[in-house]
Length: 291
Ligand code: PAF
Image (spheres, rainbow, N blue to C red):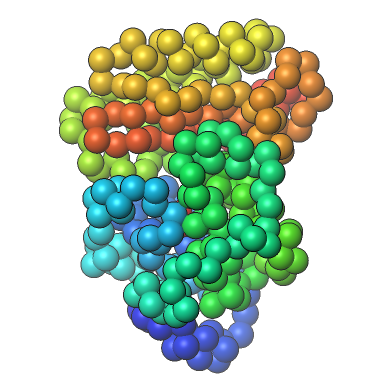
């Protein structure tokens, strides 16, 4: 695996290669969830490029940016062991040579996709995500961009950005990888204490209960209220939202509406960490997607 720190050097290396390129953007602190993205990329492409870049423009709180775990040596070892060919590990000035101010908000609109959930609770976050992903795509120029279902709203925003900018890149979405306890893998999990880690496993159990409720035809708003209240009874958990939305528009799901996919998404504070997770349900099949 080659580690490259500048966009110019990356372009030189990639332009000398032939074959299909898959790109896995990350912020490091890699875990098995990221390795599932690498595995999906390796399985379907000739060259796999991963980036590790803790993007300052998508953090609303500087404390969260400062506390974001950084483990570049261990990350590089993991990527190499899983068959990644090129690691792009840039400095901020290489990604943003003209400064971080240039935003895509003036040219792109995400409408209902960013109105709720993470969009409502983290102002500017998705502008930062769109900004960095569009810049990374400009640098790497992959055939396929590989992202995780855990950040469902992020995937919806990136899909919209690709379509609005007319970019020629496929988007491959990989199902969420969970701990044995059911807790969705996340770089932020390593900031949880043992009791918090145990408590956080309850989040997925409540999402399961909501999915079971949807399968049984229970009203969406009642299920949301019930899950929110029940998560809130746990002493170490503080729910921020739990929403049942149309997976395509990310607007609240209306009972009986003929949508392709329903997303049940939540953000829950646990100790110093804000965790997000989601599960998908296909009403036409009356079954969960990627269970
Ligand atoms: O999901 C992430 O880790 C980040 O939001 C991404 C896509 C790498 C952009 O910084």
